[in-house]
Length: 94
Image (cartoon, rainbow, N blue to C red; front, side, top):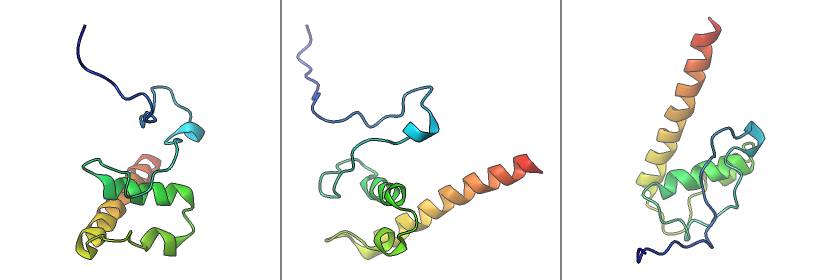
């Protein structure tokens, strides 16, 4: 047997193949302090958007101890991701 232990208490943050749109990214929210991935800022922004996309003030409010430049950069990156999706949709409809 392997000595590798898997922490089963953490929710699996993956979209399973064949997931329906309503189940997409449908996992418990995390606080910014608990996010430990390489892209935790992007993850936090996307989580905020999924929570309530109309609450712009909440989406734009940086967590405590967050570098302002990195925060702005990640918002620009998120904008480009969503703009790319829109561009693809518009190209398909033409």
